[in-house]
Image (cartoon, rainbow over all chains, first blue to last red; front, side, top):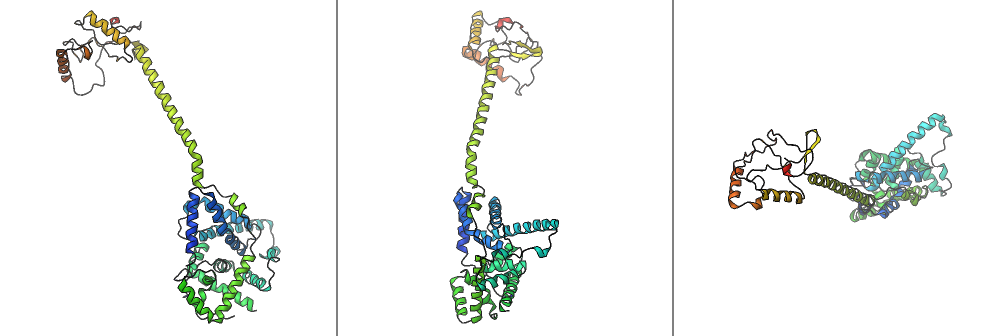
Length: 194
Length: 218
């Protein structure tokens, strides 16, 4: 399984090059003073960032998280060298923000001494949105994944990122990302087959 | 649901879903999927998973995000340009004021025709009046000194001077000299020390406390 070619290998990632190039053009336009380029970049990537946020367990302040991600990205755009795609870079920033929020939430929960059993499950608020039975079961299957598996599965299936891009975003290796993906896929299949 | 034994093809299914495969790779994967029920099932599972992730995500308010973004750097730089011009204008104005003040001071000093000597005495020092100078020459010199906008004060010493008075040129202007006098002056210049003298020779100044400008005051 681990010998399988990467998504970014031969034949993989062929459809993203144009998108990446367009991102670089928009970044250059923004640096040249075109504020509309910033709006275009937000329009291209905000939904993906929101999906990643939700899949990672963020429920209440998705807009704020995505906004913070873009603000931080644009403030440090000079540090973006294009080694990875702009979208991957955004995922990296958002993931760091998510981790910071979780640490802050954990400290707050510890202070309030809230029992873990009292916490709502991550997708409870979305029950009304997902009506289809198959999708509901899929949602449950994804919910049962470990946080890392869920991140990798979301980026691979939801966003189509290559293992290399996932590794950059999550801070791991391509091999580890591939293993996490296949473990996640096996877990999802097993849950759906029950 | 079984896993396809062709791990390579199975690994590319998400890329096929997101249309990230090049044409040749896409054709190969499609050909495999057409003949592989396991991969068709997994591809369908991926479609459902992707749809679920999209549906589970609330709609993002793009305007809310865009409003918080920093302004484009070049625009911010452009806004600061007028301020830079103001700063440049201020510096030019300051330089002009300094030049005017300096020029006025110099002109004022020149008008008084003196230099500040010890004990804040302002003295009018002039070239030595040689005995050979005729009264007409002295009178003309006085008139020129009064008319000159920036007179050149010279320190006059009673003692030995660098320029001897043998040529009788002490009070003459170059324009008033004849050829013989000019040659004599050049000869004296040639005999001068090549190194500049930074400190004047010890001299005794005659200080005219009345502040008259006439060389006769000495």
